[in-house]
Length: 260
Length: 260
DNA sequence: AGCAACTGTATCTATGGGACACAGTTCTGG
DNA sequence: CCAGAACTGTGTCCCATAGATACAGTTGCT
Image: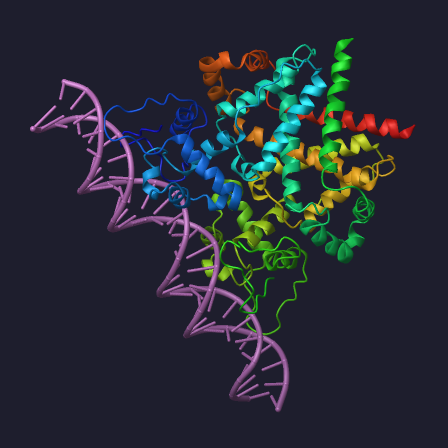
């Protein structure tokens, strides 16, 4: 719970004079919200809300109508309170979004004590993460730029890094591998949104791109050829599978080489 | 030039009833702006602005102060006109951003007639793209979600796909490879922003993460170990180099296998 | 019982995107 | 050559959103 105790050091203007080093006040707030502690008050009326309910309300709205629709007003209305009531729990919109992201991504589902090799583990992990991002497409735009990671996100990282235990990769390399996979998940999620809920592989973006190529194709000969041949291939999960395999292959090359 | 001719079919409310298939009116506008034709008017006073100047004004502001600061007001002020003057050239904010993105990414620099192998070509291409994204970090958040590609972006795709000519990969696979690399560039750009302009590898995010691990490290043993060992590694370009090599290695595996 | 702490709300401001009407400017056709 | 058509730039309005602040109602501790 936020418990702002009245005034809190909120920097108003666009934080133009924010120092580079050290934790800015806003960051400290986000850390408190995401990681606790959430000492609940003893005096006063019982709070009608809590951070989890607020986050879930925002997630429902964003899932249905996109992140832009998850305004303070709509989230509050969804909870049956007024906009300003939310500010008792959350210092601002940015912090609300941070909560929504960590709640939506959630903790990594517990492993079922399987003892696969690193490759199977990482592949399953990536597929699970992809599923999460597909369920919450708005999470993509809510996670651009540097930000404070929440316990949910960190648990995913933990899982990926630990899957690479005993592979001969050092700590930085294990982190880099996880970052690489996350990048692919994000990249494909972005592409996949173009196809929309209908599985049509030649939807919106495809048709616009097609029109463009018909008109300006001469300027992009290689692309024209590639698109023509791609039109006969199978659906929108192809890019996902392709990239996933390539990354895992690339990791395998390094790991095999370390093994000798 | 926009030449809106007065009324244009701008959908106001948040476009809730937008069909999935077919080009929405807004998309058609963006295509016209990005790809032309830009028939310039014969009658009336000479326009004082043009799309290119507007886009570059927006880019300068976004480069300096971030995308959020590139409001219609500031862009207009930067050009010495009022906000509403811009609407004579651009139907709305979204279209302005689309113009900024394509102008900032620009056309791919012409190849110097070198005849390297696919791997060197792709590596150079990825490094060039990375440079562009580092110069315009706001381009990341301006390119979330499906959108219409401009001639600049398409020329980059063209270059990547043509680098893979003669590798035995089919059209879809060549596109997928390019998408994979773009995903990595974007992922690393996002991480790199955390380090800030100072090359300090243990800046903002690092220190926050460090604090978190000191307090909650027990919950993330593998991550704690990885971070400890990563702290002794060399700087923030490591993740970029690592991922780039892995992807190219992974592509090489497939291409070699196709070659037989 | 009464005070302190806390919650929920009404009202106000600032800012941004955008609609619209209008005045000024310039080209074209008769 | 001149009148109207076409076009540009601008002032004023509206609406939505984030947020500040003051205040009234509620509850538990002493």
